[in-house]
Length: 255
Ligand SMILES: O=C(CO)COP(=O)(O)O
Image (cartoon, rainbow, N blue to C red; front, side):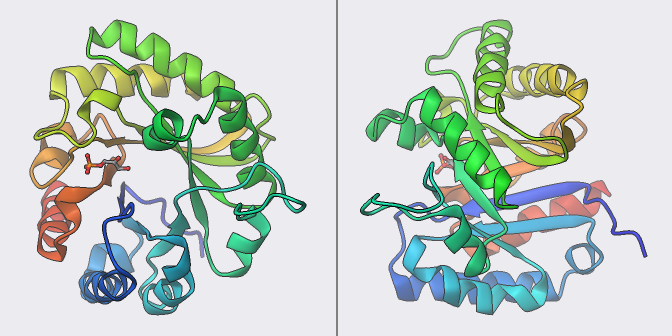
């Protein structure tokens, strides 16, 4: 049987907001939402959760039966070696991750992650069978055309070493819209995501490409953006499971 390609990909990062116990409670709530949702069960909506590292194995155990994918918030450039504090893609795969965030704006801004590092982390994820959730976005608010150029440049750099057959989730996250009261306006998001898709469509190495939006995303946004994005990458505004439930209801209404 061929696997249904999801129409929407909806992911949540808990960043460093939650304790261990709170993370597990959240995962249980998401498992409840997912297992009672026919769209998730049928593969039309793909859900993923990205908790803090120590919670990953327990979250995998909670979410695996309901088909929710689990990822990590970062990954090492290398597969093994003297890299104290780093976590390798092979180990993330061993403990049940199927995706990893690469190049989140907070990693770039607060931890000095350069484009070269983002490129190497993307390659590490892909060579180990993990889907990179490749986070890109312009630093300052400006026109959509300038943002699109910058984001496409970041993507080409990040994907420089991507092998043929790569599956990639691009998370377009304008840096100025992260941690803000509201997401970027739809008139900004839609042309940027459309330009990204057009730019990468001809890249024959990409077997599967999803383009999702993140940055103060929450209930209501999927409806506004549907057709232009493949889904959302959520932070604060989905940390209440009820909000995630209402986004799943939106997805159902759109399908
Ligand atoms: O960075 C984000 C997801 O990775 C978005 O976070 P917020 O929705 O909390 O702004």
